[in-house]
Amino acid sequence: MMADPGDVPLLHHRLASVLMVDVVGYTRLMELDERGTHGRLMNFRFSILHPIIEGRRGKIVKNTGDGFLAMFDSARDALEAAIAMQSEVTKREADQPPDRRIAFAWV
Image (cartoon, rainbow, N blue to C red; front, side):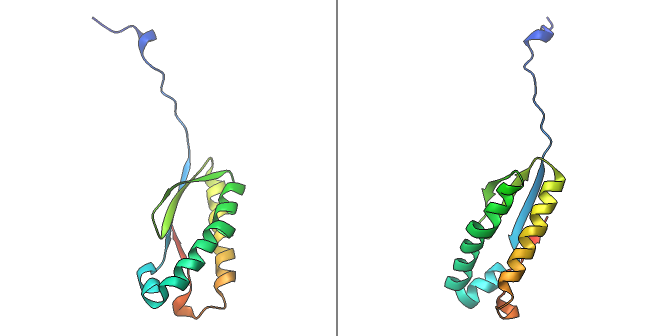
């Protein structure tokens, strides 16, 4: 006996862009200065990353310790957020010695 097509639940599809962010050389940075690295990263998350993501209609869906996954409604929003975050973090890290700068890898 075949199921009535009216009994099949509707599937809802959603297109989204996912941005994966990871701190480059996090283990090395933590070995050099655990307290300073962690403090700067937390400061960046709440003063730079979260506001930029939310300002481009994004949402962090998973934290990974030294990175996170964010979801956006469009690829353009994800790209603009990545560029803005990288630019701002690079500016703020300019006064750090090169081997201690926080930088992000984006996927």
